[in-house]
Image (cartoon, one colour):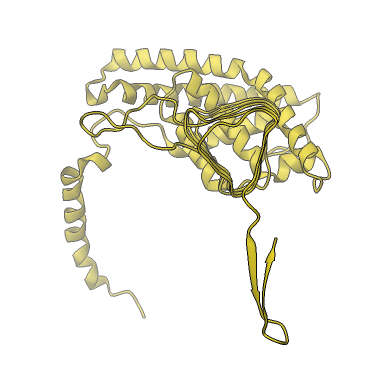
Amino acid sequence: MATDFRLKKRLPEITERLVETYSEVGSTAHLGYCSLPNYETIVACTESLKEVLYPGYRRRDGLHLGNVEYHVGDLIDNLHDKLTGQIARALCHEAGKGARCNFQQRADFESLGQEITLKFLEQLPDLRRVLALDVEAAYAGDPACKSLDEVILCYPGLEAVTVYRLAHLLHELGVPLIPRMMTEWAHSRTGIDIHPGAKIGKHFFIDHGTGVVIGETCEIGDWVKLYQGVTLGALSFATDADGNLVRGTKRHPTIQDRVIIYANATILGGKTVIGHDSVIGSSVWLTRSVEPHTTVTVEVPKLRIRGGQNGDLATTKT
């Protein structure tokens, strides 16, 4: 059926009603203020950063030691300009300047944005060394993996951890908004939710990955391995006298070195510490600390199996 253009007369009225809600529900409209960081630009910067960290694996092939410096130099120059502007926007918003931000104030934020950007970019060489250990952790921890190249090209766990580590650097430098934008973009791609405020040590591996949640105040040591569905979350949320959430407290667990946490385990609470060299079994629900070298499992469940030629009901332990 062809479009009836007469019905388009209704569109101005729809537009008017929609615009009215921008005043009625102003908390979900950002109008008349300084510009927020641009989502597409942040995503583009993140992709460029991955290109810098893993040259030859992403958008540009045919790289070698004779031309890689030119390629990376061009990316770094572009990242400097884009990140400076985007960080300045985030800082301006955080400062609450809004429409009152004059030319001099915008210049001040640009200057601070450039300073932070340079500090961030200066850390990329060391970050590559850390990520190389994460790649090795994935290869060493998965017998199905055939090569380090396979990890870099295929593993969602490395994708999520790479973006997390980039976002964590910006978080530590005091950049608002942008780190969360980065990790939530990675979350949407991988199903792995890592808050940029979490602290994660070296040689970290998330196997399979889908459904993993790592909270803001979580602390994870070195040589830790998680499987899909693991939650490192908060036990409860404290509130003040007015019923508002208390922020800035340690709400998520601490996982010490060389811990393995199997699929769908849930570990909650800021006072919960999993001692080094421990193993947490699948589907465990844990809200208290365990000593080092501890194995925690759920009781062996029973299976009820109905069927077979005689229609008998069998009960067995798994």
